[in-house]
Image (cartoon, rainbow, N blue to C red; front, side, top):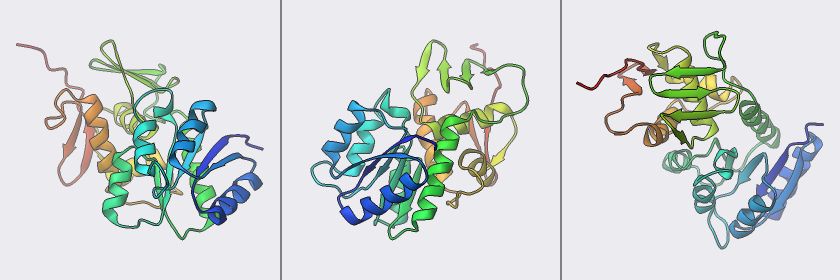
Length: 240
């Protein structure tokens, strides 16, 4: 029995029952609510280990619930899987840019949903595997990346990153200067079982830069290598 607490937010009772039944069969503890306001209240009352979030909800939309959860601790790091009938690529991109860890389109296969839950929770509970190092904190320029606490500091400021953003940064920081393709980053942060789009990495990198870079349009840390992917530039630029 895994025992992790899953909050299911969906206003379709049939879907909620199916999702809850499959998750409970796998050992998860499930709480179900049917609207956005109830979702926010449930998260505040008992912080879940993961949220499965429909987008088209009464009162407060799933988009706004996601925005609210990502505003700051302690909810900012709670993994979110969006489960929705909205299947346009633009919707997927918006969802990922808002900070969702995964995006599943209805109709869906319940066993696949459970597998995605496994994958997201596994990433949430494991430190990334960068290059071998005796230290559990990676020091890159003025960044301190604590692999055990999943915490990033730039100078004295703690950066409020989602788990996926943290995993991308830790993966790049593990081998500074190495260029990772989008597929390599997708595999590193989502796991082999995840069947997603390479370009979802771009959405997560965009969010990461917004929080990490002094000037996101002119990144100093996470650098694009056109036609290949991304790398962490650990060249320490000294003020002249």
